[in-house]
Image 1 (cartoon, one colour):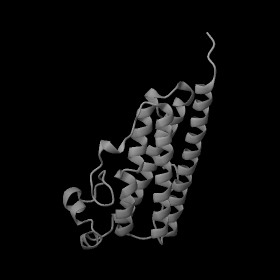
Image 2 (tube, one colour):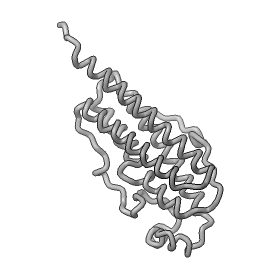
Image 3 (cartoon, rainbow, N blue to C red):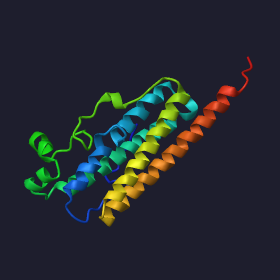
Image 4 (tube, rainbow, N blue to C red):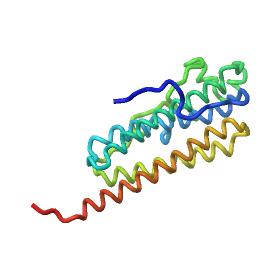
Length: 189
């Protein structure tokens, strides 16, 4: 189903070690509106979506895994050279005690990822509206992360991710219109 290209979708550069920013970025790794939740949501919903838009959910769900990889790379680069005292100072002491520097699916507050983040109603239009909302929440979070960063390299990667959320939202909006047109069409037998 997939062909993995051994490079990031967009280059990730980090200007300086910044565990505080890494702590905030973890929200997009394992938070309710993060990339893992989005990828799993879309790849799950595609089974109950009409064929006309099923491929869209597969494509965007797959891309969300690429975004997850970018976030993981940023978090790793922002923390790899940080002394333990600095990790503790920014509130990552408990994370370090449990996982050392390994990434773990959790939000910025340290709450573990849960399947309750993944929505699926089974009604294609309801699910697509859920997906639009998810993309808009992710876009907003990326903007807030941009506002919190002073590293031009991190900001560059975050802007790329924010723009992809906008594109995904637009594609889901188009899919809603396709399904509405299909639903409202008279059926002849």
